[in-house]
Length: 417
Image 1 (cartoon, rainbow, N blue to C red):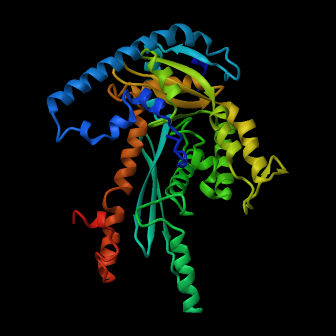
Image 2 (cartoon, rainbow, N blue to C red):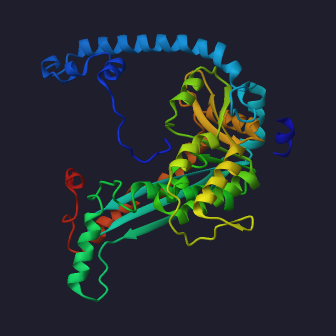
Image 3 (cartoon, helix red, strand yellow):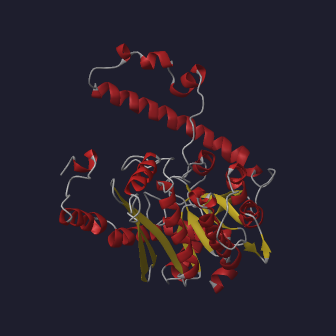
């Protein structure tokens, strides 16, 4: 670590719900489904005193049981992390010294040698036009390094001057295949997930091509679900994984920290950590195995699919990414402060020690959150540049000028006008 310092939610697509039997329901919620569905067991209004007492009792009991679990995990699971089949390089639990964090603050974070990137999206969705506004900002503690934005305009109807009946029929077919306004769903070929994918791609491309810092910090997984699948576009999958590969294999000095991770196993292990501890638990390969095996990578692509001079099919490409690139990324969890919960992070297997120290050093600056302040700063800058009325204001004005100020607003959008 000292030598290094001297030089320097996936959100998965919605799936059909799992079948839950009566026994599983009762085990989860502590009462029979029949009782839950019996309206005679529901209260009229709310008895606040009774509600508070029940909430207090449930939370006290849940926390007490979790405390017992933590001690078992520390004693029985932590010593075995390095020995389980498929454990990544460096698997195990590590303590962080305060003196090392002070050095990270001085030599890396506050000297501007770490830059973070985060993005934001706004969507204006009406029947005639859908606008996706995507913004990404790059920052360090030395100042704002820049913000980049892009807007996509989607229209179902673009008259080509041909047969108006045929164009009308084509329009109706397109709209039947899409969800209603402000209701993104699986039928829409340019879904909410695709918008997230383009934003995620831009964040990683900026970290690779625009950042000049020795260490780069990102938000989420370096290879989230929407990029691994391409969100329906294999061209996007190819370009995104090409960027991720370069970040992993060429730059190597990166740290990604997830918000609202959906891996309860990692969070459970993280809760058992003491403040200023981190654990290396998995590899990125283990995290994306099922996604790659269950994905559809057989449609044609227009992008170059040569990998080190060898032309691959999309299916071969993503599997080589999984088998060659993903094992070089380790997945861990850390706790920064006594008040905050754990955070899941990703780093290169050769540099996870310094990466974890950077994440913890930046996270202790927010005692209650225990989350990197630099990522929050990037998000704040991005919202300042691309948030608020930067889209809604011009759109409202344009619809007014077009003589349709309210006609295409959804009920929800117009409710509070």
